[in-house]
Image (cartoon, rainbow, N blue to C red; front, side, top):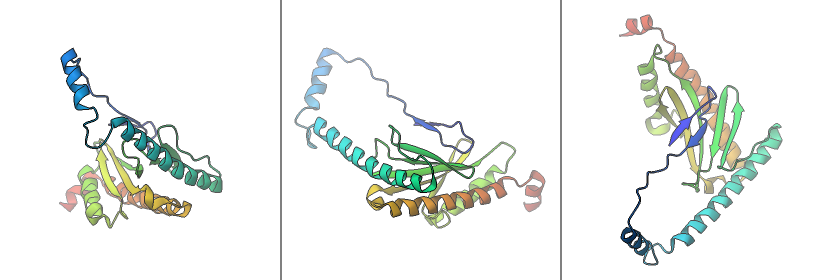
Length: 201
């Protein structure tokens, strides 16, 4: 899964790479059909897919309802799109709320909190991020991850824990406050000059 970002503090859109499928022989097709027929222990595939889709729609509807109510409170149009993703700005961040198709029982919240350049104190930022990640105390249950030149703050929680508007509102409030704190701490270390780094060694 590749993340392509256009906003300086936005994780951007998610694109999935489809696996390359090789053409099978007629005899191979018959074996595949036999292998994926009614003998599957988990039950018919069509029934499982239908149940997954229904669960995903139900969970997305729940989160979408909370987001719309939250948006009306702050004067913004907040809702999940067809891919189950909602983007909204907060200070210099783009906060992303996602209910993915491949994991419909979990709500993911993430944003970029630091962008690194070759001249930055990259190792200092990585060291601090690892310290903050330890036991997730410094990140309030979220996780800092490095993707290319970006440091992202990520949080996930079961949909069952967000049954009310207040539940999601509290989670987002804590996440946004944590994002501000992580950005301030990481940017401070990131901007340490090369000369200052040499003096500390």
